[in-house]
Amino acid sequence: MNDHAPVSAEELEPPSRGAARARFGGTPTSFLAARAVVGTAVQTDDGRSEASRESEQHRATSFRRKHFPTASATEWRDWQWQVRNRLARLEALERVLVLTERERRAIEAHRGQLPFAVTPYYASLLDPLDSEQPLRRTVIPDVMESVVVSGEAIDPLAEEAQSPVPGLVHRYPDRVLFLVTAFCSTYCRYCTRSRVVGDLGELQPSPHQWEAALRYIAGHTEIRDVLLSGGDPLTLSDDKLQWLLGRLRAIPHVEIIRLGTKVPAVLPQRITPQLVWMLRRFHPLMMSLHFTHPDELTPEAAKACARLADAGVPLGSQTVLLRGVNDSVDTMRRLMHGLLRLRVRPYYLYQCDPVVGTSQFRTPVQSGLEIIAGLRGHTSGYAVPTYVIDAPGGGGKIPLAPDALVGREGDDVLLRNYEGKVFRYPDTTEGAKP
Image: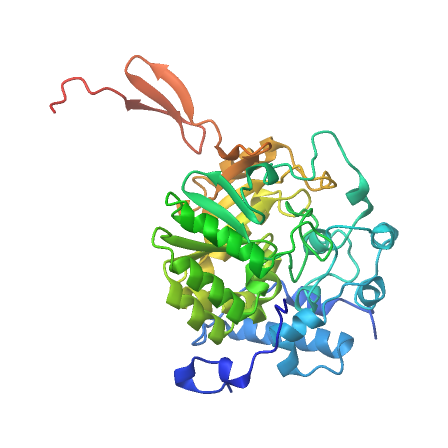
């Protein structure tokens, strides 16, 4: 299957509109410029500030001219060019980053599943000198990936055990997870499905496999909610994605379709006018986006989210709690506030799954509780995600929260607020009339 076939000029806009129209020296300015987030100056008609426009142009242009000198600005903005020119080999990565010995050894020793690949766009956000930069840690291999600790598993969430047909996970009564592709434009080093992604992964979807999954969904009338994931479903071509969405919409009992994607963070060029025009035909359709750190909230990401939101697609963020990346109240608050400015509702904060080779990313559960406590009451409720552990063994998502219920005294419930003060709530219906 060729999921990255070129898009014709006629497809670039809705049919009614016709065809579309010195190496590492000094301060890494392209990286510093990437920290500018929309909403900091006078806004233009597309929601971006003048400062953000200048930052976007400076970062992208500087990086492109230095590392992809033959590429035009038009090619840089083409998501298929971005996919074709991913940094997926050691020599390509070394032209962009000063690799540490740990990083280089990890890449040279890499075999099998969970390949490494980074889009040129996302590479432009990485600090070329600092291996501890949060974004860089999430996508560049490290020797710790070869270390396996107690409690880790290849399939910690037992998805294979709850898969009635290949590529489909039926864990909850009324919804299924439909893994439609093994491909991601950029691979996260803490990936829950490292066993299935990439060319050597266990999951290699085909039309035959899709048909089997669709027959299962059609034959189980209790399924009202389908989540497309993978891999990243938005890396499929528009035609293939439209075909899948159309088949699902033809099943009467499927009420909601969701897509889980990191594309707006790592490949925002993919969110084209053509794509959003197609997606809006399949409402109610929602997206769960994967943002990890405030540095991902660039003007390009903001533009992608604005296009989706303007097309009526509700956007929620599912963020993984990662040690040394976003495990502080300040970082998480900046991320959640930035997401809200992009019209993305913070939804879940995930405890990092115990996947083989991810111990360097996992935090104590107490860290997650402290972050939620540091957000609750100190910012708007919309900015506070639900902290969950996806239970190993296939138990599903279990929410965790700081202890707010202190106990009881007589008919009163004792509650602790965000300041640590205790309040009473009269928990009695004595005297109430039906």
